[in-house]
Image: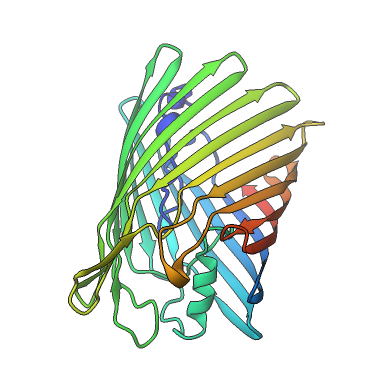
Length: 377
């Protein structure tokens, strides 16, 4: 195992876009592993027009394969089942997501990292526009929390390059990622959609002081224009994400606090017949979130982790029926886990959510249950 991996760990960020959530991170000396999880997420939304209920079952399978000492591969695929009760109608959407594969290689004494990922279009597409689209719209609401918000997409790939260095007690890093999104047919009978490519630039730092670790990140993401039938349709706004966190560790416990602020710009909508700009408004408001987690280790093979979190969402700039006021979501829960043996770890997590959306006009309540099994070989 190489101790110099700490030089670059600060810059190894998650590939933040939904098309590529795998981590660009090399962990030296780790054996091959597979992770099987079960997610159950349930939300109830109550407003003046009635009550909406949506449940999602999701089963993601992921794996890690060390190819060489500084070269590894990861994969992830998930299937899900969604049930929506809205205005007296019972709708459902079932299917698999795309297969994602990521290869990562470090260079120059582990101070540089290169990653190449693939999005293989194995997931469900050509959804029914009049029924299944409704479920996708509810899943996409930013005041609800779901592990999977869409199923299949087009062929895609991403390239990530990053580097890190040490400056006294601090570790500093930076990286850039490019994501290509291919055309696909999201709804049956409609023209293929060409989502715009995107890129992100990040900078991060890590400072260790005795038992305390402080980390910070800033990520800028820009998007190209989406097209339909070769005509401009939509352009997602640029966004900047600021993250700061701290960890305090002892023999028996670890305290983690993380704060995140997502600053969004204005989306652009086009006339899909001629490509002229129709409007430029914020479709989603800025978001601020905080998570605090306490990991307690009563014995070597067990841990208990209570946590609290909150997300505060500003109002958007849309008008009429598309206007959405501010929201506040609060989560409480925890996780309990056990190392069964040297090759198997198991965990159970439960979170309860409560809050409001659309400036108090919608009452929210949610439940999420996660069962995880991690096996190494």
